[in-house]
Image (cartoon, rainbow, N blue to C red; front, side):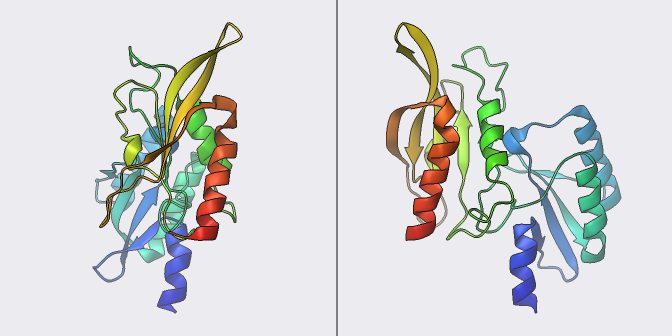
Length: 216
């Protein structure tokens, strides 16, 4: 039925449009990082499936509109050819993990957060724990001092900080939790001042498990 199909396709990044017979397909791009080869493929998909157009989202995804349902499998195969996926780009899942668009090149960044953002993204991709949450769940990483990805409106926000421990500099994150927009905008609250960088995935899983138990 349509209701049964809706949950299946949304988990795989496929939205039905108001126009009959066509769909929006959203590609999940962790931390907004793509290779040159992937960009060429994304452009080719836009030409072949999207009338020469692709939409860049505020969560660093690429999506295509007006794709006939019968052509969706071919589009997914083209993404898979360059190791991109639409999995869990929609629905009540861990959505695309965002990061500073100038990570790695910003003059004022504390450190490059991209490896941590990607590790979190892939740790929760295609997992039973995270593909059917009470509500969509958003995570963002900021490495620059201006917080250009607005961590305070994310369910989990990580801002890069450094701490000195036993005379040595240690990477970590200031963690905020519970932010969001929508009909009831909420600014996040401080969860901890310093989380060692190597514990990021553990903390994400702990918060997601609590969220799963206690709902939206």
